[in-house]
Image (cartoon, rainbow, N blue to C red; front, side):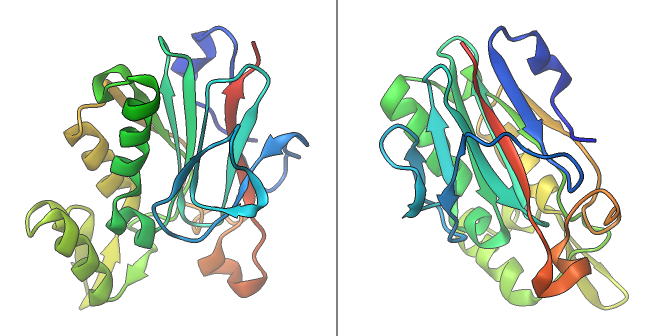
Length: 216
C-alpha cells in the first residue's frame, strides 16, 4: 500500500503519494541528489542526479517531483489556488537548519503564496517511539528555534533521548500559519514489512519515493 492525503484527492489534477517498499513508483518523477540540508529548488530549472538539494517545487502540469526517504520525513506542500506543489526531504539536520521555512519562502518569492494559502502532508517516518538521538541533535534545534520551540518533539525515557520529528515539523508548520497540516502513515521503524527503515535495516536499507505533481 501507499499513502495519500485524502483531502487532496478532491483537488482537480493533483496526483500525490507517500510511497512504500512494495508498490513501484512512477518512472517519470524528477528528484535531486539529497544532501540533508535546506536547499529547495524549482524543478523546471534544476533537477536530476547532478542537482543537489532536499526540496523541489513545481507549478507545471505533467511534472512529477519526489524525494526519497527511509526514516526521514517526506513533506508535501500544496497551494491549491496557485497550483503549486513541493516535495521536501526533512531529516533532522535539514529540519534543524530550517528547510521548511526555506521552502515556504521560495513559494512566496516565486509565486506569491502565503503560508495560510498552503497545506501540508507529512508522510511515513520514524517516530518518537523508535528514534533515539543524541544531545547534539536537540542542541541544533534549540540553536535555531529557541529554547521553548526547539524542545518540541523531544522526550527522555529511561535516560535516553528520543525525537518525534513529525511532531516538531507539524508544530512548525502550524506556527508558520499553514491552513492545514496532516500526518499520514505509520512509523517506518515499526513497520519494516511495509517501509524501508535505515534504523531497522542499516546501511543496506532501500528507499521509498514520495511524489507529487499536477497531471493537468
